[in-house]
Length: 305
Length: 267
Image (cartoon, rainbow over all chains, first blue to last red; front, side, top):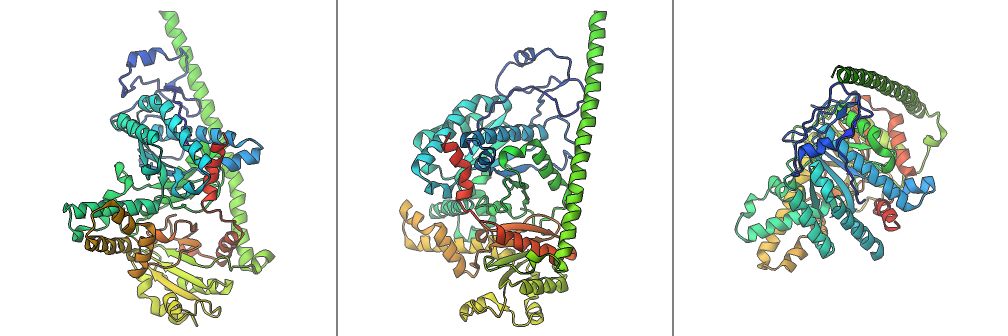
C-alpha cells in the first residue's frame, strides 16, 4: 500500500466541537514563515483548530468522546488490508481501491499527529510479495518512489519524520537513494514518525539483527557471551524509533493474523482486528480501535517489552 | 470599531451554537451505534448458549481436520485455574481437536503438566508422540507446554548457536554470513535447541488483554488469533464457535496481503 499525502494545515475542525478560539501557535519546523502561514488562512468566523505543536508534536485538538490523551498509545502499527476487496465489492477498478486506501492512510496519519500518537508503522510491502509477477512489483515500487517525491514537502510542513524499514538491497537503486534522502531530510521532525515497512517481514528483521551482531562479534566489538535479548532488540530495524514496540496493532478487512509483521515486537501488543476493509476504516474505526485499547486491561505478564 | 466588535461577538456566538449542535449530533450518532451493537452483543451471547445446549445444528458436528494444531494462551493471572484448563482441554477433545499447545508466560502450566496429563485419559505429550511416531494416532490428544523461555529466549539460544558456527567457520566474507544467518537456518536451529514446535493454525487467548503474551513468535507468522476473554468466563459455545469460524475461513497466505498491492499495479 503506497501512500500519497496531501496535508493542508491548518484545517477547519468540522467534526470535533471546539471550545476555544484558535491558538496561533504553529511551531515552524520547516523554516516556513509563520506569519505567511497565518495570513493564508481563509477569513471565517468559525474556530479553527490550528495544529499547535510543542517540542514533541502533541496537538491541542480535542479528542473524541471516550478517549483519553493520557491513555493514548505511543506507537500504532497497521496492516492495511482490503483495498482490492473494497474495489471489487463496489464494482470499481482496483485503482479506485488504492486511491481510497491512500485517503484512509492520509486521514490516519493526520489523526495520529493530532491525537499525540508518536509513531505509526504501516506494512506496505512484505518479503513474501517479491514472488509476485515482476511487472506488478516494479509498478508498485515505482509508485512508492513517486509518492515519496511528491509528498516530501508535506512531510516537512506537517513535521513528519519518515523511516523506511526492510531489506532495501532488493529495491531499485533510485528508490534506495530517495529513501535515504527522505529519511535524512525529515530526521529532525518530531510531530509524528511514520515508519513504512517495505520488503519487510518479522523473520527477516530477526535474521538481519543476528547478522549485524555477528559482524560486531567478528570485529571484536562484542563478545559472544554478551549476546542476549536486548542486544538483538537493539539491532532490529524498529530500533530507529524511541518506541519500537507497538502498543496497538490494527489489521483491517477481517483477517485475524499478523502475517509475519513485527513478530519480535508484538508480544504485548494489543491486537485489534477490524472487519471493514482499509478504505472504510477511517476515523470511526480508529476511534473504536483506540477505545478498545484504552478500555481493555493491559497486562504485560510481568515483563515490560 | 464597535461594529467590528459586535460582528466578532456574533461570529463567536454562532460558532458556539454550531459547536453545540455538532456535539449533540456526535452524541446521537454514538448512542445510535451503541443501540445497534447492543442487540448484536446479546445475540452473540445467546448463540453461545444455544451452541452449548446443542440446539444449533451446524455446530453439532463439523469437520475439524483443517485445524491441525491449536494453541491456547492463558494469562498469568488465570493460569492457576487448573480445573478450568482441564475442562477446556476436555471440551477440545470432545470437539475432536488432536494437538494442543498450552502457553503461559511464566511456565506455570509446564510445571503442572504431569497433573494435567493425569486428569486427561490417554493424553500424551506431543514430543513423546512425535518420537514414537504415533502423531497420526487419532485415539489420543497430544499436549505441548511452552512458555516465554521458548520464545525470545529460544531465539537468542538459536542465534548463539549460529554465532558459534559462524565464528568457527573462520570466514569473514558476507557470503558465509548470509549462508549461516537465514530464516531456514534459524528455524532448524530452534528445533535443535528444543523450541521448534509446529506452527499453530489457530491461537486462542484467554485473558483480559488481546495479545499473545510472548507466545513463540517464530511459530505464529500466519496463525489466526482469537481473543476469548477471561478464562473464568469461558464457555463451550464460544469455544466451538471460534473453532467453527476458523474451519470456514479460506486462508490466503501471502496472496491476500498482496491483493492490497495488485490494485495498485493495475492503477
